[in-house]
Amino acid sequence: MSDEVLIEESGNVAVITINRPRARNAVNGAVARGIADALDALDARPDISAYVLTGAEGTFSAGMDLKGFLSGDFPVVEGRGFGGLTEAPPKKPLVAAVEGYALAGGFELALACDLIVASTAATFGLPEPRRGLVAGAGGIMRLPRRIPYHVAMEIALTGEHYPASRLHELGLVNRITEPGQALEGALELARKVAANAPLALAATKRVIIESQDWSQEEMFKKQSAIIGPVFGSKDAMEGAAAFAEKRAPQWKGE
Image (cartoon, rainbow, N blue to C red; front, top):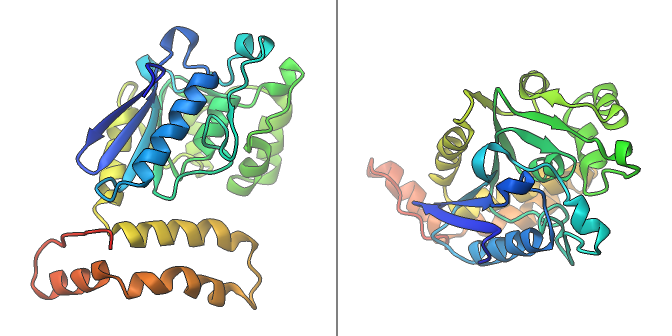
């Protein structure tokens, strides 16, 4: 793994850190490839059940590295999109831990996560139009699906910064912490998620995401194809046995 992206494991939760603090953790090609490589490796590991994405030294990410963009260093990974994440999020649950700025592509990385924990000092925004650009890494598609239409329009069209407290009121941010505590808050939430069965988590996430485009006629058929294998898994039997025996389950991801 490159120096631009750090991986740390905490039990069955992995923390992925964008490590370019002098550049406010702006995303360049190395960061994008590092995140993609980390997710590919961690998705294949049955002992890791959830992830936290954060930025080093008090900033989540100020977005795309514009200096790199001018020199032809595009922070896009084929098949995964901007930051190695936005077009193909991981199969496992991903929590964003946001301190400081989550702007432009940084906000889009957070929107590609399943849960967001932010400190009261965090600010979000899509300032791309102020630079002659468009939030094309999912921001202007995902945001109006998460918050009211007119508020999403305001954020996208003004390019202004919005405090985490406002986005928490709108339901976009799951939890608010004191400054400097977003990572710990995200780890607490990720551990609660990771205590559950890995196959059930992956199937649940997949259904929630994919079902947005299902018709009523096909929804249960498509859901059954995804969740059916979970009901026949060893983990399902383990969950029932653990309940009957009044003990904690020992998940295998099988």
